[in-house]
Image: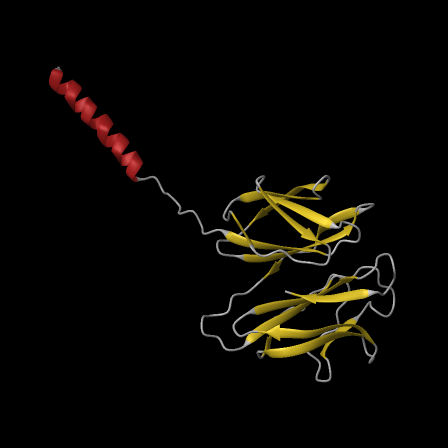
Length: 227
């Protein structure tokens, strides 16, 4: 009888150990990184709350540095100001080591939201050139600033496409290190709408050039910035 009890205990122990050894565990992915850009019409300071605990504030027209955020699981993202919440129903699942750019756009009288997320890129160590991309985030545009071209002042066209509001260049384009003046022109013309002078481009980095409304609700008045 005692022998049967011991045998039963052995069977239970083997079963438990067998179950534990069959458990599949997944490693926690490395954090992602998120950069917020405030291109709203009328929110002087945007506050974005990520994963309920991480607050980042950014003034209109500017971008934050990259903020580490949990990857591999849904996280909540809330858009507001230091005193008001405008959107609290956003959820993102980010990939490990991903670098995501989120442009905040809109007007508090209608809707404040993100433009579709943009994946940033990291160049391999030792890369001697750089890459650049463009996003047109001005919204109070009717005619002159609706379709834009991007040029190097006094030089060649930087990017091949024309861009309408909310559109980003589909690819990063190579650019050599140096000091540049960038300008945006009314599509198909030589009419310069905004200039960003004396931009230092360093080796091995990715850059985002972007427009936003300079003086909303003034139409076709835009500013040009870079990070």
